Length: 124
Image (cartoon, rainbow, N blue to C red):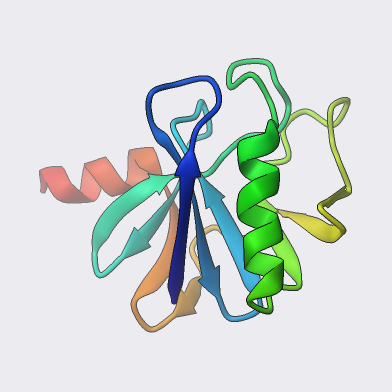
């Protein structure tokens, strides 16, 4: 798993891509309820592309995707949102909705969860 980070456009934070297998998973401060767990720690929320709460996609996401493509990524995983703002490709790579990965292990030490499930488990 490789990590790519660029400054976020609209917040004083970062947009991060994790290359897992052949896909780049896009994370940043977001309204998305989906998160990426690595080694049992929440490493971030999935970026949502619909623009209703996150200001949508900007050049920071495209930069991460381009760099990931240079390293061999063939698809983008993020929250696609409500549909009317949905992009089917970013920087030439097809986009997949993270909701289809919920509860699945991406590799031995990485999986997708919801923030509610993560924090409920931590509270036990």
